[in-house]
Length: 156
Image (cartoon, rainbow, N blue to C red):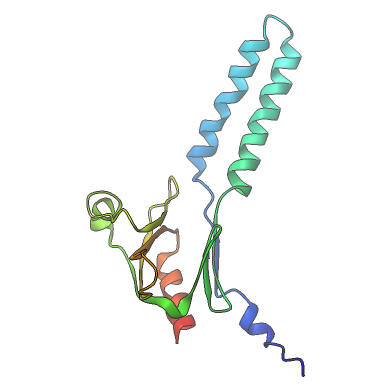
């Protein structure tokens, strides 16, 4: 007997690529004039081509190397880390006034964190697994309300 889950169970309830904000991509442009100036005494064309290639490579790595947050099939995945939603406790969006404190002075060193430069939203996810020394996950997201809703729906 071969049991297959319905396709809707495997469809992501939430999916977000945490690519850096556009100013980070602009900052990568510094490679273009840098390589141009390094190669200027040798060959302008080689300097321009190398600078353009390195800048493009930075952009590709920044985008495709960004972690993906996904809630699917009863699991929360943040980058390479995965956890079943049935061990999650309270899930809440961190209010803007408390974000600095949550990332800094109030941060538990045992917590699993995933921050991304330029992403201001923050979600705190308590864990209810006594065998896991990690008390909670703290992750950046551009869509905190949607992530909280997706996790609550998966838990029910």
